Image (cartoon, rainbow, N blue to C red; front, side, top):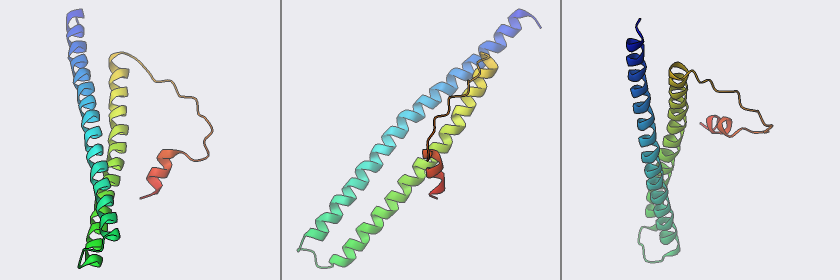
Length: 129
C-alpha cells in the first residue's frame, strides 16, 4: 500500500473521530439543558404541592394533593431514568472514543490508580433499580 493511500485512510479515520467528538460535545450540551428542565419542573411541582397543602382555599384538597404527588413521582422517575440512560450512554461513548484513539493515534489509557472507597457511586446507582 502506498504512503498516499495510508495517509488518506488515516485522514478519513481522523474525520470520523472529529465527528464522534463533535457528537459527544453536542450531546453533553443538550443533556445539561434537559437536566435543567427536569430540575425546574420538579421544583415547580414541589412549590405547587406546598401551596396546596398550606392553603385553605381549595375544595378538593386531597384529590389535588394526590394529583400533584403523582405528577411529581412521574417526573422524578423520568428524571432518574434519564440520568441512568445518560450514565450508560456516556460509558458507551467513552469506549468508542477510546477505541478510535487506540486505532488512529495508538494511544492507550493507563490504568488509573484505585483509591480505597468503601462504596463506589456507580455501583450505588446501578443497585437502586
